Length: 79
Image (tube, rainbow, N blue to C red; front, side):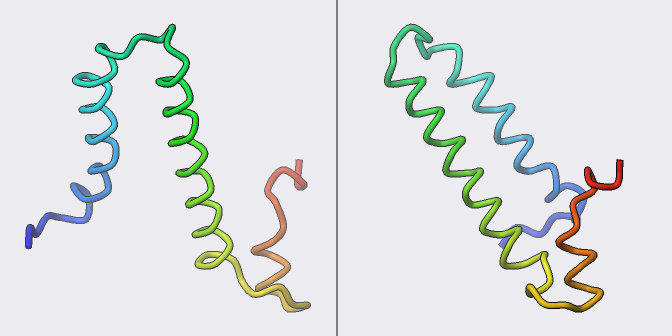
């Protein structure tokens, strides 16, 4: 098992995306519909995974408690 600091682990995803961008994306032809579809499907899958994590791990259960009200209240409603 590779042990790295939490700071280095936080940037692992960014390093992966930059590596893909520099090595794979230049070879993809943007005029081909299947590459665009693949990238769109990947983005949709990652977005769905983020939303699933957000609702199951970071929000309080829906209830009439202060924790639930503050965690479900969106920051944009305070503008």
